[in-house]
Amino acid sequence: MKSVIIIGGPPLFQKFLKDKLAAEKVTVTVAKSHNDGFIKLRSNLPDLIIIDTGDDFQAFYQFLEDKFKNPNMTQIPVIAAGAAVDRTKIQLVMKFGVVKYFTKPIKFDLLFEAVGRILRLSLSMDVTPCVLDLHRNGDIIFIEIAQALNREKIALLKYKLAEIIEKEKLQSPKIVLMLSNLELTFLDTPNLELLLDSILDHHTVKPRNVKILSFDNFTKELVAGHSQYAGIDVVENISEVLTALAGNTATVNTSDFIADKILTPMHDDDGTSIETRFHSDGGVIQDVDDDTMTDLRIALVDDDAVTLTLLENAFKAVRATCDLYSSGAEFMAGVKRYHYDLIVLDIFMPGISGFDILRRLQTEQNVAPVIIYSQATQREAVMQALNMGAKQYIVKPQKPESLVQRALELLHG
Image 1 (cartoon, rainbow, N blue to C red):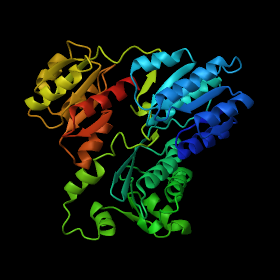
Image 2: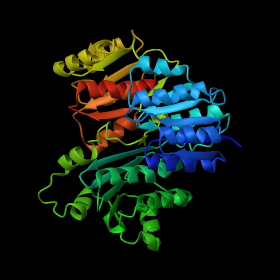
Image 3: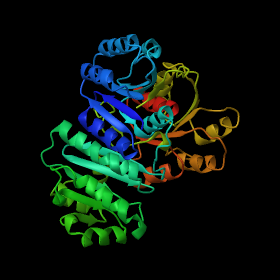
Image 4: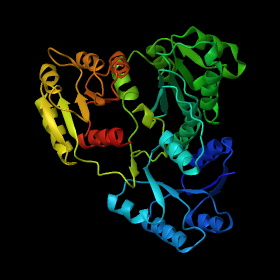
């Protein structure tokens, strides 16, 4: 039987990973710190070490150096997770057996894939296409699920919710579960029950504070038919959610509410350890044998000259080559001449719109990934763009550097 030791990191991350690996018949030992981990390494030589670097990279380096000096530990591979660091530091730890360095928050499917490859095990993963995002505003946590229900992400949700609730010290969190684009059947019963149970798992979450936005009759019937879900409301209108959570819809503009509370994500540096977006959906992983994250050719498509200039300057900082297009027609001509690594696209432009471009790109092969960068906050626009193949939807305005970071995460996940 294969064995893994997990050293450091948030307790919830340790528990989630331990539960997942244990289900795959992998023996897991957990250590609270680098010192504790080194002691347990001496008595229990594992097949793999998964370690959180913590805030002190030098201490992490010292741990690796001590491991390397012990002949029984030298060959044990290491997967590390921590804050973004210079590539020179990644190169420094290569000689100590670090084969992967994941920047937090970690995309779990990449981590699990790396673990399986190192252990030479075929680890099971639900690959059902699913987008699951969390957004927090005050004591309201929005959970948005599109495409389908994926058991890996649903299982992950329980730990992610707990991590957010405890980090923010939320005493009475309110949950809005947005399933408005899902049509479920009795075949989805186990996954839907797992989803609701995961949400209610934390002791601070009460059924009366959980609202489900859904048009699906099966979802309504399942919630109504289970006594443990008594108090959960299934509604078809965002204003009903506002009534229940805010208590007063008369003074709240629905479009402003959607833009502010639903389309505004939590900060990338919110301190959480695991990402609910998987790499297969399309933080950063720094592979010790990757090339540098430069030499990209990017198409920037926007009818606003200021936006184009700001984005161009930000992408130039990572030595990317940018082609600027002030209209959809210009871009459609340019895309025939160049191969792009990424397209950053506005939605509402005169003539050929962003939707028109997405529609045309759907017919092309090997098309570059598309990030929508738009002021459009209507939910219908967001879902339409994602359904037409956009990999990410970012609402203007954002710091250009933040958009560049999101782009690099997408390209080099």
